[in-house]
Each structure stands twice: as C-alpha cells, then as structure tokens.
Length: 399
Image 1: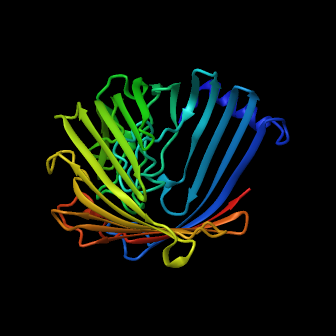
Image 2: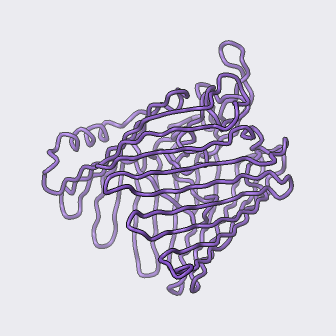
Image 3: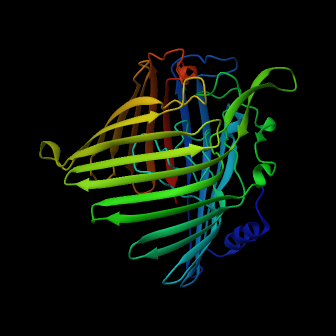
C-alpha cells in the first residue's frame, strides 16, 4: 500500500525516538500460528496444514497534553498462501483534541456494530479476508476523522481519502471462493478508482442511561465487491472484484435490562443494481456465578435477514439463525470460551465455530479457533467451504 509522505515521516519519527523518551510507549507481540484442515482441499494445490509467524509493533507518543501519535504495524509470513504473506499499517494516526472537539488524520480503524455474529453496519474499514475468514480483521483506512461531543450526543464526520481493496486467499489458500480472486484485474464503477473520496457522518447517543444508539450515512465505494468471471494471463478462469458506488444509511442499538442485553443492527443501501436492506438482532442473557463459582455464562440468540434475491449479489447471511454460549471463567489467566452455530434456515447449511483463549504467565497467550461446516447445501454461497473444517492454534508472546 502506498503510504502518504506525512505518514512515512510520522512512522520514522516514532521509530527513532528512544523507548524511554517522555510520553513514549512501545509494545508489541510475536505469534506462531498453525492451521489443521480435517479434509483435503476441494481445489488443486491446497494443503491440509498451514503455518505462519507474525509480528505486531505498537508505538504511542504524547507530544503534548493534547497532541498524540499512534502507530500499529503488522506483518505475517505464511508457509502456503502467498496472499497471506502480507503486512499492513493498521494505525498511523495523529490525534489533536480540545475540550470541545477532536480530530485525527492518518490511517485509522473505526468499528460500528452491536451484535455478536454479524457486523452489518461496520463499513469504514476494509476487511482483511486473508487474516480472518469471518471478516473480523480490518485494514487501516486513510481518513480525516472529526469528533464533536455534546450533551445531547456525539457527531462524527469522516473524509476517507484512499480506498483499500479487500484481501482474498490465493490459489493455495483455504476457505475461499471456488475460483481464486485475481486482484490485479480489479475494476471500479468510479473513474477515480481507488482515489475516490468517500464521506460518512454518524450521530450516536445514550438513551435513558440504558441504551446506546447510533445512526450514520455513508457515500462512496462499497467495501464488499461484486465478484465477476474472467481469465488470467494463462487463460485460467478466475474471479475479479468490481467495486460499485453506494449510498448507505445504517443504525445500531444496544440496550441493557438487568441480566439481559438486547442488540440490533440494520442498513439500507442504494447503488448496486437495486436498493435493498438487511438487519440482524438478538439478545445475550448472562448467568452470573454459575454453580456457585466465579464463572459467568452468556446465552446468545440472534437472527439475520438480507432481502437480496438468490443469484443477485449472493450473501452468506440472507436468512440465518444464530445461537451461542459465552463462558467467562473470571480466573487469573483470563480464560474464556465462545461456542456458536449459524444455520441457514432455507437450506439447513450450518457453521459451528469455537473460540477459546487463555493467558499463560504474564507474557504469553494461547488461542484456539475451530470452524466446522455441516450439511452445506450446494446452492448456499458458502458451499465452497464444505471441505474446509479447520482447527487453528496460536501462541502469542507479548512484550
């Protein structure tokens, strides 16, 4: 990715600062990760075992009481998928703030959403698909971000000055589309291509001390591309991304009522052939101190609906029911487990996922993720994952 000159200067300045400089903090982590797939891949050249190593460096400097720099740089080397050997500046931003407003510029990350399984309204940052098949990891987005807090809510304005293309697994990658995606053939609806300036505004507030509510409007390049058929230079069939111009209004709500937590997200989008809407909503109920222990157990139920027709901009989440269990052990090692299942109601296709994490000592964390694709229907957009059941083990060392 091209880094604007001012950001390059910022990164170099922070790297040259001594670690003991006043107001300067440096930390990071190194990780080793292994994937074990339970079946041979559905496509040629796919292996059953992947391994990778990654590093993350975070730098923060308070140049003045109201002037700060932050950098978060990441790089991974993968044994099999060359598209997964990649790096990113997830953060490289300058923050200036007063009592009445604050502004950041540079590469930033912003999360919008409330529900557990699907984040429909999260649109500012592009998805780093090779880093997390479930879409949870995001790329740094060049932006200018103005925040104005008031007693009646918070107004935010975004000028997004450079579009980031979504990453996709390569030919040897697993949990991918039936044909590999050739990013070299990427096309845009806008003649400005990745130089198109996107705009967004958001209002958020707290309702009655029990609910967080947000509503926004986004105008610019869609983060999720349409994948179209083509051929590469050797005549092999491939897909290529086509990014359209859209307008989208979205809202999110999260409300607390005793042990209950109610969540909802919804958006309405125009610009992609025809306008459409999507929504997800649900609850989480927490059983505190189960079996007279320190452990808490959360019961999660959610539903997602998308009114796009079959065969037109297909989506994995069109009419799905989700259920999950979240166990927080509340021990000294911050142990936790999340078990979830997503079932497509019309077809019965089901995805079961497990996430578990535990700290070992002061500087090491062990993470275990697993996904299993059960009874996948051939008409389901996720059918290409049917043979990609996997277990992922990761160990991180923090410094």
